[in-house]
Image (cartoon, rainbow, N blue to C red):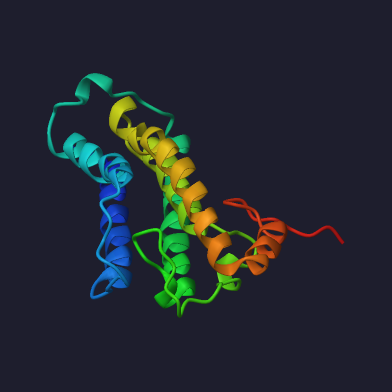
Length: 189
């Protein structure tokens, strides 16, 4: 039987998927989509493994029980992740692409959630991964996103930063000095 926290995860998953769909449906890339094998990692960690856990008994061998207060902590973390995912997309607007590309007409977004953080969308995914581990009481499905997102994040961010430096040059270097990657950077007064 699916628990309250697992239902909460499913509801958040649906809402998060709707957020992503809202900002990707009908979007066309400047060039044909590149087959990025790394994209399979978050797909497995956020979608396939958790849904397989919730809909089948296959991963029941890895179940564990957390204190209720710790599971409950997953709820606001998940809500924060979904909000940050929404804000990241909304603030980027037409500048977002699934591929690591920058359109010639793109401008460097430094407002909204991008004011202090260069990669708030990835921060949202890290929060999602943490919430998933707290809401799904299963070592395999609960922490799959966290584990599988590690290589994706480090490879993808490095690639994106190089592309953005190449496209925006000094403007992006200055932006790097004023922001954190996924944690906000605040200026000392």
